[in-house]
Image (cartoon, rainbow, N blue to C red; front, side, top):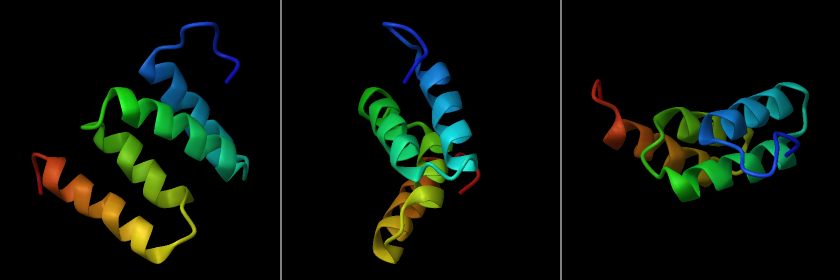
Length: 73
């Protein structure tokens, strides 16, 4: 990430989304993993993680976490 020495989770999430939209899923996944390590209840990060994972089972696990964490689930 090029968001500075100590990026916030929000900056890292923005970086991840931009990377994924550019087609750079590996950088997006790395940034999302960083966010989720610090904020395991970040629903938006889990949704984007599901978007950039190639494995169906891994996507489903991310979406299960979203459902469990979401106040609307």
